[in-house]
Each structure stands twice: as C-alpha cells, then as structure tokens.
Length: 63
Image 1 (cartoon, rainbow, N blue to C red):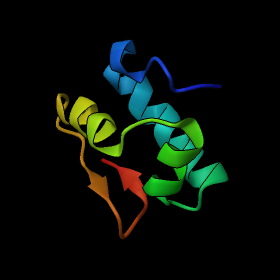
Image 2 (image 1 turned 180 degrees about the horizontal axis):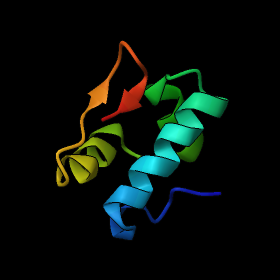
Image 3 (image 1 turned 135 degrees about the vertical axis):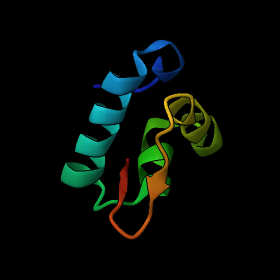
Image 4 (image 1 turned 90 degrees about the horizontal axis):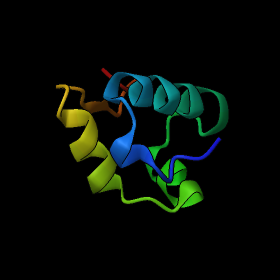
C-alpha cells in the first residue's frame, strides 16, 4: 500500500489507512510514517484537516 496519491484519496479512507499504518507499522510515530512513504507531514495533516481530523500525538492517531 502506498500513500503517494494521498492528496486525491477520499479523506475518510485516507484517515483510516493512515491510522491503521500508524497502529500496525509505526507505533504511532507520524514522522516515521511520512519518511517511509516519502510524503510531507504538513501536507498530510493539511489534507486530513479538511475533514477536521487532527493528529493526537498522545494516542498516535488522527481523530
């Protein structure tokens, strides 16, 4: 699974995929996820913010 097309993905599906990857593969570390997929953290957060999702570092998820 790649996130290279995250800017055009359905935002709810994107949030679900990102949270699954954070949980299963990156121990809630958003910086590691972004580095692995070579995507901009700020762009990813901005895209998810369009649906009012924000990253909660204490739980390692977007909500």
